[in-house]
Amino acid sequence: MQLHRQSASFYTSPSVMTSPGRHERLFDAVIPRDVAGLASIGHGLIVHEHIAPAYGVELSDEDRGSVHIRPVERLLDRIAGRDDRPLEIAREPDARIAGNCRHFTVLLVALLRAQGVPARARCGFGGYFVAGRFEDHWVCEYWNDARGRWILVDPQIDQRQSGMFPIDFDVTDVPRDRFLTAGEAWTRCRAGELDPGVFGLSVIGEAGYWWIAGNLMRDAAALLNVELLPWDSWGAMPAPDQPIDDDLAALFDQVAALTRTPDSAEAEVMNASAGRTRRGHARTWNRAGRRGRSRRVDEPAPVPHARTPFDVDVLHSGEPVAFEHGLGRVVVDSGDRDE
Image 1 (cartoon, rainbow, N blue to C red):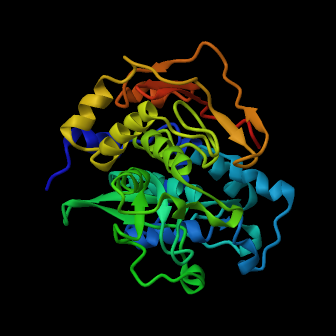
Image 2: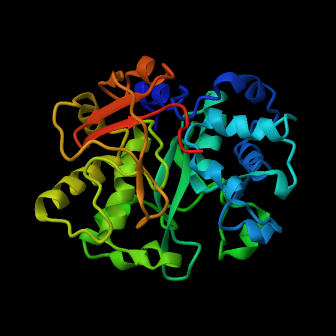
């Protein structure tokens, strides 16, 4: 199988979220070229905010501020600001910046793209953290030309976490039944194959269709090279525990089908017609928690409008981007206003 040239170009070009920007020299100096080596770079630069104690790290409120950073360029600001040595030199755990699965993912996506490898972030659920549950999670998906397929990589899992969680597979080739994209989870739950009550975040006791739909929207945005934070909400995304009516469920059925086959001709047609229809209120939120107080991200006006996901010049402009397609409209600032 060959990857469509347009998809290959789109997922190889740095986006507003995955460009190293002024830190391109740090990427140029990276020595590892294999996927496992590139994934290990993140292990030495980022500590997961919720797993930090396992590394002997107690994060301050100031330390936790980095979890609100969206673009890789700003992550690299923090990393290089603490230690400007080459990226592959692992920092001590207490010298790493705080992040979460999404930050490990976008860093690996950026590193792979810098080497000409098509890569993208996927939002969904990992079935290898808590027995019998699928937990809210992000992973990287890259195109392996030799094998002719997209391969999932979990760049968060290092040797220590492999011992903490029931992981019995190669994290550089995650089985498709161990990580489900949100579209796959939605479709299988709607078909009665899986229980929506096991999809969510067990540590805070939240799960269900509304959570799956939220991640479905985030996955759709990530496939359009707008990798939101795990608590950003936009478009038709339902509120916590919001009932999903038949019309909205039908919309999510369509989105799920497209995200399950994002490189198909049908998906490309959908992307090409983006912006012709709209649904839902346009907003991007940065939230302290799923049920926490919402705070709106600044949206300077006017902003450029990305008509399709392939409007690459706009996405690379470094200006705030208004991205509109059939699910709504999202404004994403290439800088970070939430530190």
